[in-house]
Length: 290
Image (tube, rainbow, N blue to C red; front, side, top):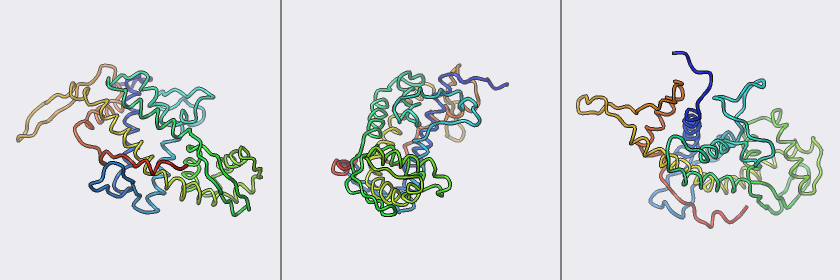
């Protein structure tokens, strides 16, 4: 069968939801975070090590990056580009979750997912205020006002790349400091990147890691809640072999592309197994700063 040139809206939805679940599974798991034990509410999630926190920051940076293409080609899977001038979180994976929440096609119970996506987006767009941020390499100190999404993106890039690939973050640092009435040149911006790592990753991201993981884990459970009724409706037993059920899911007519069908099928599968991390809530005392 010849692959279609365009992806239907339900195919795009299946692909986006599959991608989001895969990314959350990579970020919130027992390889990166310590087990919670019996305390699942009003708790604090701790990374396994400094290396796992760094991995979390790198993966989170990818989640909070725009979908891109090469050489001016259309975006993958025919996904639309965000309109210029919208929220910074619209240049992240969250933009495509928002589109699904506005026009759900696979399932119906979308309110829970919509609320969590909006809450996370609002949290990321909020400005943090951090007193006495010391940039020792350039002998500057500032009471810093910075969007949470900015220090998360910067720490993720600095933890992943050598300074030869950090021109964009050097430019971002100059902009942020200028907004805080501190002017520096390009050379100082590069010199200050290690200080950014100390503050944005070791200090701020480490403090907020459990809260971010809670948002991500809630998104994972909300997607599962959204698709569960449809998975139950489309579940079909095809045979019983040695007492074991062989099954499939009824395929929507609008899903023709093979990759989209694989993503849809895997989505339906998630309703038959628990996520790889339990549901939890973080104590409010761990959310009061920055």
